[in-house]
Amino acid sequence: MRKPIIAGNWKMNKNPKQAEEIVTELIPLVKEANADVVVCVPAVCYSTVANLVKNTNIKLGAQNVHWEVSGAFTGELSADMLKSVGVEYVIIGHSERRQYFGETDRTVNLRVKAAVNAGLIPIICVGESKMERENNYTNALVSYQTLIALKGLTNDQIKNCVIAYEPVWAIGTGLVATDEQANETIGVIRKAINDNYGKDVADAVRIQYGGSMNPSNVKGLMAQPEIDGGLIGGASLKAQDFSKVVCFDK
Ligand code: 13P
Image (cartoon, rainbow, N blue to C red; front, side, top):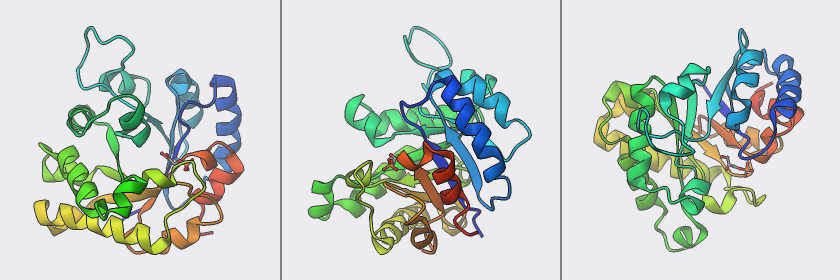
């Protein structure tokens, strides 16, 4: 059985003081969670949040990582740098980075390899636009995005990765994929992994749904057999809301 994993993606929200408030409120609310709990925060909040979540069941995540170890890459952070301040997870290839910052499947793969080799757990985002869904490209696209992202990893490394299926049309729009749509597409991603890396790898990889997931729709989504968790944007910005998503089974 795969353990559910619920991750908050704060995106470009919250300064360290606000981070302290929300995480302090969150800690007691999620301490009995049956899911792994991650908060992916802006870089300015890493040390504040790392100190607060020490000895709790909340893990610290980042929202991007560069693939080189060091060098002339203004504005970037390496996997070792993230590790050194207590980061354990890192979102890679979010659609906002693909859309606004020139992220490609090739750079996603470089980042994933760097993260894994440094001992970080990547949360690899894949997903289709509205146009791609309407033209029936979804299955081919998410399979391709997934396989390119994982290229060059060993089977054991892949088992430890997390994939987030985030239909672009559902992000921040209030539109959520139906339980069945999300389950079906995550099944497609798992099949692509199965066909290329075998059943034991496909059975181990945790695949989240992301896109307007919130306290009112989490139960239905999590009841689906293929869905192993969620990557939560807007609803992760309030401790009460995020804790209800994390504790979906209570
Ligand atoms: P929303 O939950 O705000 O739709 O964002 C989803 C997301 O992009 C998480 O990475």
